[in-house]
Image (cartoon, rainbow, N blue to C red; front, side):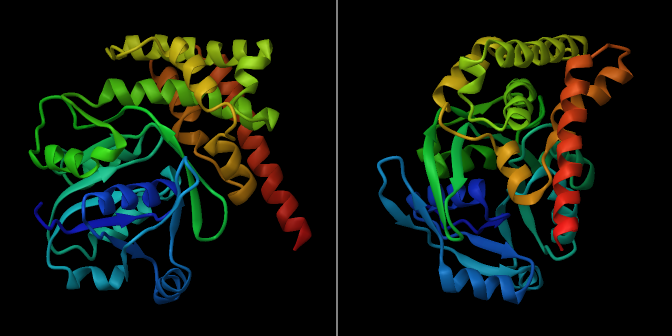
Length: 315
């Protein structure tokens, strides 16, 4: 296999999983970090991924800083795996250093990052990865991979960068399907996240609460119903019934805490602005009411505010 130059920005759960998949294809990616201190720290501790069978695999990578990026004369692919709220800064900082590249792949939940990248770069040189795999942090240098299902890679309809096909092969261990138009798949995951993530975060429960608590389920399904109406209004045809997918995903990930709840506890910040918040913003432009999504959005924003206030008070 050709020796592609691949970069990863954001070496958290998804960045670690992508590095693992690239290792399986014989590639050692560049991990692009903020500063020398971060490089030294990660080189000392390394990175491991605990697989579903509990085997621990060492991740092979080359850690560099943003300032080192120009030394890599050409990147074939760069995955940006930061949280959605860090994406614009990460992309802009990266673009000031990049000399040449073929493709940037966004990996965030919700809406906004793929659109922003298309504006800053060009639609042809940006693709989106909708990844349906579960990974969470269990220590400073170890992440747990709990498995997953079919994931999707593609671009806006009518745009075809042939490198997308090569990337799918590089990530073949993650069961990647190339789609002609990535938008319906982004919206499918958006609606499922809009149901599961805020409800589990507000209740501070694992994903199984969506199955076991009839009121939590009804709340999540109402959020999805509003999202379906918005999607139809802008011409999105969803690939599957998102309500059935919500139940399936909640059952398959019943023992997991949602990424939104984990982010709230660890960082005091979530991706709610890019999920339910995005649905609310679009609904207002369309003059469609989305009271459930707006209530979920406000509730999670209130929790963010409370967590940050509590931390400031403890300082």
